[in-house]
Length: 332
Image 1 (spheres, rainbow, N blue to C red):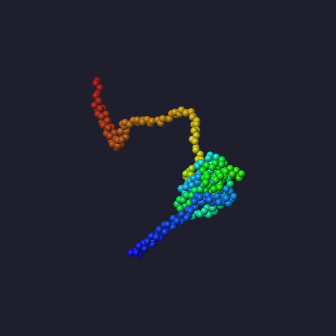
Image 2: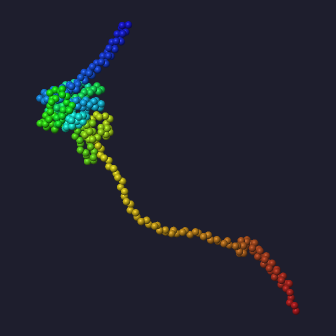
Image 3: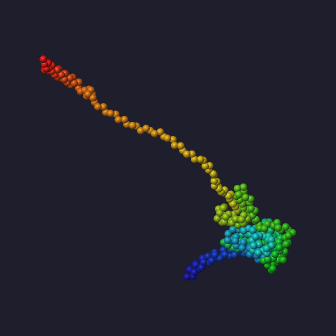
């Protein structure tokens, strides 16, 4: 009986381990927190002799929201216009705002991985530019993927709206500290979208550059993501460096119907030409000839006729003789 239980318990233990170990691995993979990202940025800043950035609750919110949006789309691309988004969230208190955004995504991303991904000059802006004063970070997990976002910003008015007073040494840094470095020339977001000039036929195409997102391209051209998806036959939001997107097709010329005036010519009254009438043939009655005596004689057989004439002549001769014999003598 014990053997029976052990034969079932051992496979069950293996099954439980198979389920638990992947969960433990996922937790290990997503061990980088928003605080770790902020500490990474500030450690590099201080290593460059710059003051640490102050944690700002507004920037924490925008970074978290951006990571959640990326996770909902399942795409590791910039949303675009980070400057406008943090200003709309209230950062800067209405003053002029400058901001930059770093993102990273991975299934097994460690802090050292993220540091290596952000080692280029564009991603190093929050670590090398003294203009920035505030920072926020967000981390969101979805479908096994972890999305990391850092927002660094400053305002020309030196506003401290949303700044955490308990932050480290960078908490009292004025927003005007970047004035001597020409901070206005710093890119407002890492991968801006430079719009293309319309062609002669009115069409617009855009070549996708590294780091550009479909949403930021749509925003730059004043169209919607759905319009770009329809024009380019996209089922999702994934685009790649070097893709050429149709922003606007050449307008189809509309042909307006042109009314052509018809010259009214005078109507000629047709002249009736008399048609020659074909004479109706008149039937002439031909009289049927009445046969005469000669015709009747001609139709009599000649021998019979001759015989008849001889008889008639004989009779006539007899009659003449008879008359001459019986002729009365004249009275004395």
